[in-house]
Amino acid sequence: MLFLLAVVLQAAVPVGPGPSGLLVVANKRAATASLIDVASARTIATLPTGAGPHEAAVSRDGRWAVITDYGAQTPGSSLTVLDLERRAVARTVDLVVFRRPHGVAFLPGDSLVAVTVEADRAVLVVHVGRGEVVAQVATDQRGSHLIAVAANGRRGYTANIPDGSITEVDLVAGTAPRRLAVATMTEGVAVTPDGGQVWVGSNDAHTVTVVDTRAWRAVDTIPGTTTPYRITITPDGRTALVSYPGEDAVRLFDTATRAELATVSIPGPRAGDAAPLGSTVSADSRWAYVALAAQDAVAVVDLHARTVLKYLDTGPGPDGIAIAAAGR
Image 1 (cartoon, rainbow, N blue to C red):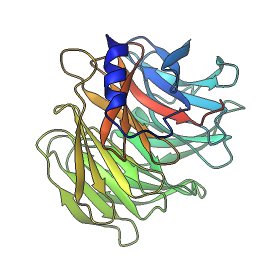
Image 2: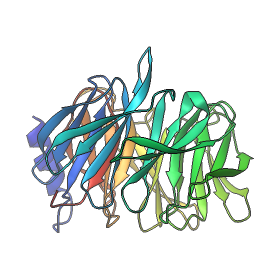
Image 3: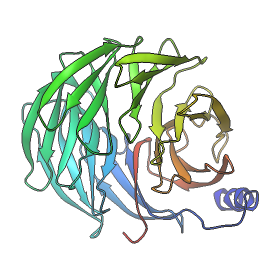
């Protein structure tokens, strides 16, 4: 049934080069990560992680993935490093005293990742190969949940949920020079590649705030009616994709004008709610991949046609998601 639906959806979009690459999906309920070949829709490996894997990041060279082991009832305190060439777990990084790792992003050079540790109000810089924490930067805000990092890797921005703020973290100097109150219950966060704008979602106000990082102030507020759970900005910097699990949809916005470009309905491959959560976008800014937590699937969205192309099966409870280029 899933295959037939995918065929119908593919027939509805223009012919052209299709999506490809290796998708890494963190399955929260199963404590696993799925490695999915996008072109064939085939799961080529299912690898163990720590309890409650929440977010995923892939190195720029496509060789490594890092999964944050957030934990369940007991706080997690580790990262799972995946070797995408060998399709295997390379190592588990023990964060020792740091608890609840969540947001993660690779830095230029592919040897370091920035990781939020929510319970400790901090961002860590971790050397992936050595399994070593090389820096700790305090955000001094509660619930530093996610981190968005500009393309040059110098600055990251955390969303601090209960404090309704973002913190700017200088990942080179190891300081947190600025904080800004933006809304309430701020969770979803993304930064444009040039570092000029930060987009932040409010879970309870249902708004998305756009912050000009140079002026360090909010320049726009986009209203909504349900929670904007996650935000992803395309690598070309032109489009912001916002997931609305309460609506089974994603909304696309022009980052320059903040105008809404489209609402893409994502019903999911099966009956019932889809609950779109985490998302990632291909390097050419053509394809978006959206984890559907309630359907154990990923929707592949054509950002040119603004339609769902097909669905990919995952493990139970997909959320964090990242894409490596074809060839891995």
